[in-house]
Image (cartoon, rainbow, N blue to C red; front, top):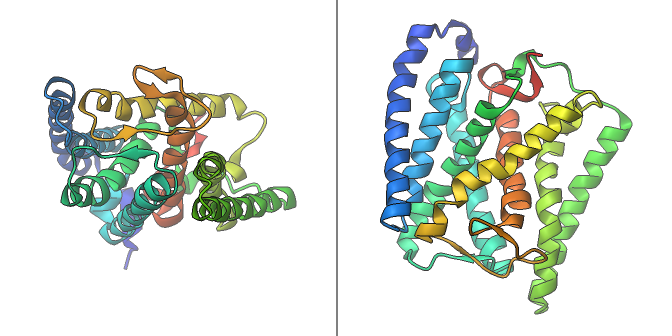
Length: 305
């Protein structure tokens, strides 16, 4: 019997359109409604329809343009998709409650009750926001990415392997240091440690993908590929801005105590737009390559050109 993941080869244009066009229409409507809630009505629960809508919209467009998306995985290989969703939900809980609020006190939800936070932040907000960010990266990427199963083999070497292991070890040490500093009452030092944890943590997920033999930046980057890498890096604050700017009206979450950088762009801290969203993009992107069938998703680090 043919493996279910390989059915993507038989997803003809008509079947893709049957799922993609309704998803795009619903996604566009929800995204527009969420922006109305945020900017016009300053409703603090605007982000839930935004992440649902933007995920459906970007995912559907990728289905139509690329024939590959996490939405395709949701249809063709639902169990794998639910595994990814559950892991993103658990990581979102850890990021939000443990790292963001207990350790760093970096943000608050001034208008959300505890039940609101469970529904709008942990069950829906984080996993769908991360999936939406990945889909938007694939959509905006140029040249267009190829299918992950057509990507070149990862360039393995002692240097790349050693750097990956060092990166993972550094992340664990920084995390332990941040906890120790917070327990000892040195909150400011803990916040600074977590600033560096954002960078190492983002690339640690990619390093883990590399060590597992999956698509990764560590295993794909070359000197010739640096211009494309810089372009992808420039997309990070753009994608972050799409998620953060409407909240400057609605204030579902409010940032505080951000270390080192206090400058803002349209009411959004620059560090949030750069280091923060670098982590929020690379983490789910790497987990996508680790958990999902390669033939169902685009390969960010490989292109048609």
